[in-house]
Image (tube, rainbow, N blue to C red):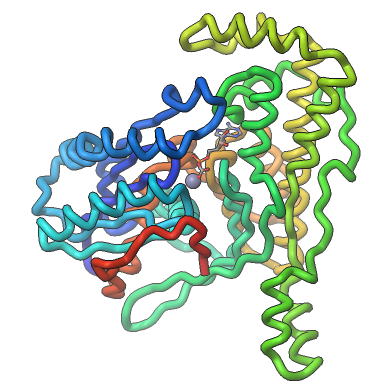
Length: 401
Ligand code: KG4
Ligand code: ZN
């Protein structure tokens, strides 16, 4: 396959990122400008502010990525940009800039699905380590602030190089796992984003301290899923319907119940007052450290945080490994912002090993949003000549196929 230097641009949510990646296997540079400080006072991402910050950051971030890679603009073979899913205004900033740059440099432009990017973050790093023979079928759990999806991924080889296709066999019915981390952190006045703080605090609490009922994490088998129903209508015979049903059962998730359970616990155990004290104390510290959080959390709160994380991790791991068994997969990828979570990684490693299933994660910097994963996912499309027309636009709800 030809060597290619691809400049990736990512602006789907609250990180403006650019990276240069060689042939989907070597990161030459990866720059991420985080907007966390901007959104922190609001306890979540404010879409209008995100777009404005992307506009401010995009030019210097791209310039820096090229400088770090030691490559002038003209030496890039192609540009890749996130088309969706994500915040529409945020996506448009990256797409508008990438189009202008591609036009000025007379280079091809490749549109990339953000979720495919998260999957390729794992592939990129495995290739970088020299591991290029992954076994198929491959199951990927993409678990982040906006997404909790299970994909069966397939790799096809042809005279146009390799191409990837994906089948969604499960997704969240309501909140994404990262969203649950962020909402629980907001309820408990632990700041934004919630995942990294809860991750560190959970190690200091008793994960069996608060009991969450299984019904608080509901995940019925969705055989009546609308897409499946539509598919069923499109086929003629009962045997064909049976075939579709039996090929892959669904493995959906649901995390709004556990968030509500935490809220109820706070109300029934009179934690509101101590939460307000913590909100004021942490609000007075510009960048709170772990010790600041610990000083301001009583044992009951630490137990609550640890129990919440344990319940969520057990559900994610249990559901994903059940899907892996049902689909008889040979390899498991776990990727996206929540894949940075220590307990999630350890539990997956331990439980997948019992099944003899190899599990791969991206490094922590590549778990959360970045542009190296976008440039890596673009490489097979570059080889295949799968370029975007200049009139393509952002797709906030883009589906991965
Ligand atoms: O992939 P990402 O950067 O953006 C999206 O595509 O959503 O993921 C961000 C999410 C946030 O919800 C954040 O709280 C969560 O990932 N996160 C974590 C950890 N680090 C980030 N969740 C749990 N544990 C972590 N260590
Ligand atoms: Zn993401």
